[in-house]
Image (tube, rainbow, N blue to C red; front, side):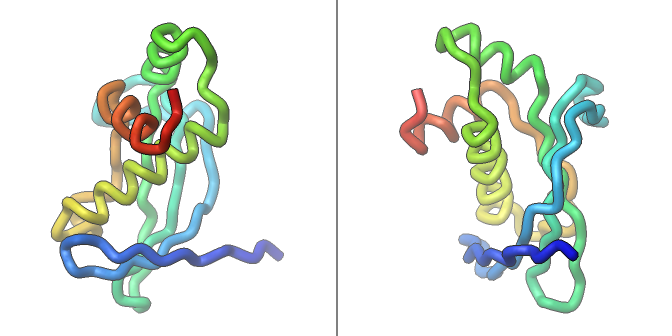
Length: 121
């Protein structure tokens, strides 16, 4: 039996989200960009009644571009940290997370911004 660590995040839209990490798929295809990506899946609720899945896609080409520009590979923990930052940004920016935030993308610019804010160079 898997015990999930439920975490809480208070978004700037006024919602308090509870979420937990479900898992990661390495060879997912993101519908928005049709490229190979790692898919990080979270279960999310803002009302404790309805829980829904949110997928954050981190394209392999974005990770490769970051590694090339920084001269080192991006560690798994750094990738996960960037994914969580993208999830938090959606919590802050989207008024209706369930309707508009079920599939989130990370591009090179947002990856760079997330990692810089975390002190990763």
